[in-house]
Length: 85
Image (cartoon, rainbow, N blue to C red; front, side):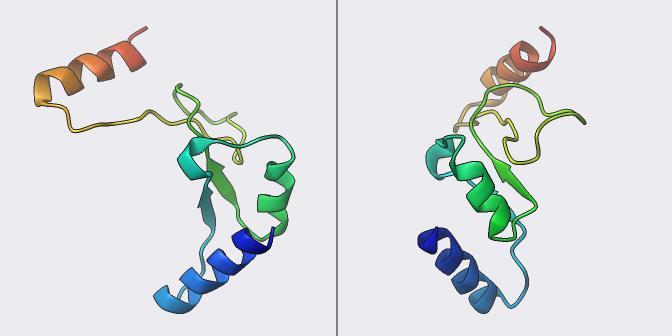
């Protein structure tokens, strides 16, 4: 809890604006961490659940896809596999 709180405070001081969104380190989290992130004043958090986000996605367990340094053809293939299932 203190690491999350202090990191948020540090970033807000350095960037001179509020930090509202959190990203779990390497996308890894457990259910006990979600209320901590919420209590520290964040409005959302990203995990590494590989699926598309939609309006009913939990805002503290937002899915996302890992994007690497792919060429255009491979990136298109990945996009197709993610969204045209």
